[in-house]
Image: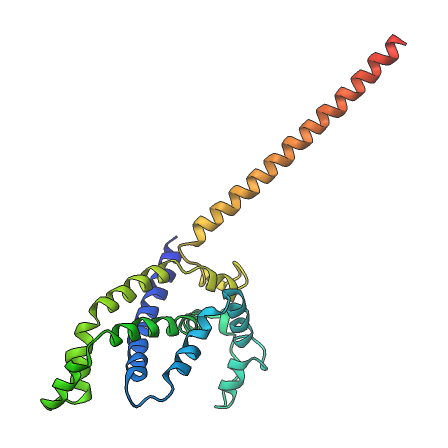
Length: 231
């Protein structure tokens, strides 16, 4: 349990560090007048969220495979490094899990922050620009304070999603095959409990069925013996 608590807490902290400031920055860039065709980039960023976790987990498991032909090993091979067993080590496995989370959910958080930015009146930025405020000052003095409700919402759902992480780890390590339980999280225990309960019920039903079959067979033999005696 302590190992699962540590893994879930570490995963949650990593997602908070990556999935709040960077999506906010990307949303600010998309909301700026310098960005051309923002609708196209919105679609590109949101596309990974529509991908099934089964497909995403399988793709990342192949990307971080142990063979030299895997994508991750080919990338580090360009820098003269040898192949790494990414999913067999604690830090590299944690990196792959965080990368999977960032790939799937960055676009969703971008849309949250973009909706918050578009709800801010442009008159505030124009007034600040007339007063001589640069872009950084406008971001820190106007955007950040007015994005507080959106930031609190994203923070809340990120904490919940981080602690409830199960599907990504399950697909990345093909079940409970993570070395030293580095992929175990808190939701593993309710899932295991449901699994064991289901197995127990199935075994109990099998035993009950076999006993009933045995009783049925013995009853048939008794009736046959009784009929032979009567004859």
